[in-house]
Length: 424
Image 1 (tube, helix red, strand yellow):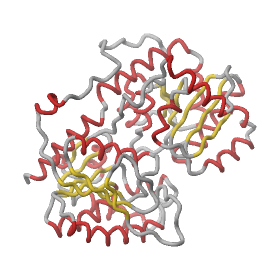
Image 2 (cartoon, one colour):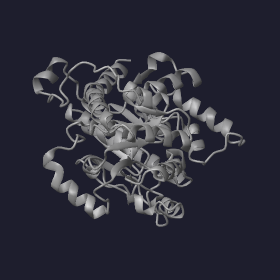
Image 3 (cartoon, helix red, strand yellow):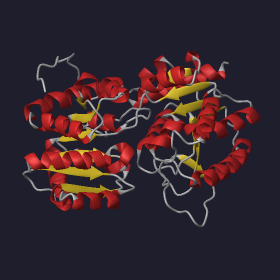
Image 4 (tube, helix red, strand yellow):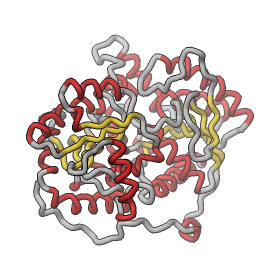
């Protein structure tokens, strides 16, 4: 790994507070927004974080946000959330593609009909393709604009999750449904420029409908560790059983094959065959028991700690336990907001060389060139072997997160899109 990286512009690593005076330069017209979230919001992972942070930032700008979601989520941030009825036989959190979503979407559709009468919105902001489909019907009934928050291809996600085979006779009909949904909204927000390009090239969505709004981060919450953090971090480290003499590699996110969890464990075995002063702290769910068993079978148990599901509010503290971070996500169409949390925490980061990873990390990421365990292990070894590079990479990544990716800035862009579609 070369240490001759350009230093870049010298800027403060701490964000300037947004003042009321700054907000009045470009006043925002408050809108009544019905936000459709066809998921068990809030459930402490990817798309939920985007929904939550967008809603909080939009509310701070004066918008009234009402969220419609599945049952079983937890309440956060004093947000107004209306949940569809549950069913007696399903009280677990559904992650990714699932047949359970068929009846959950039906229930959400029914409750949404009451919602648009009781609390008429000025526009509808729909997350995920199911939300966009329901939102299209509601927008036609109320004659209000529909904004679709696109977080990845529906059919690609179903294939990534093993729910759909590209050779299946169902693939083409579902792809055509996705194509139809993508052309219904008045505007589409994308979580990356790569996703915007996907909509343009693969699904033929007009360019003037597409508005990239990359994921953001709150750099006051996700920040590097400071000397004052030492006692609390030491206590957490001891509680987790992580020896003092080990370098800590952190991962935070869903545990699944398309997230690269299996590849991460295989790469960990290769690293630990060469040096045993490394500890892997793997934080997330839903398959922690399965992967804990895999780690035991591989003989990794003394060097790997699984925390299970970690509340989003605790994520900044636990990330500050890390010396370096890893994000082995395999999906080429979904966003990867965890990278921004790593960046704001000033963690040198290893990931696969995907367009989304490049968009976030830029030249400061450490990239595994192929989506394999061997390539991931080589990239991790390269980073672990040069600890003198860690402060340089960490500072550069935090600077990039602070200056380019904030939820406040994202909310202003979304507000501009709201005004654009309201004027159509």
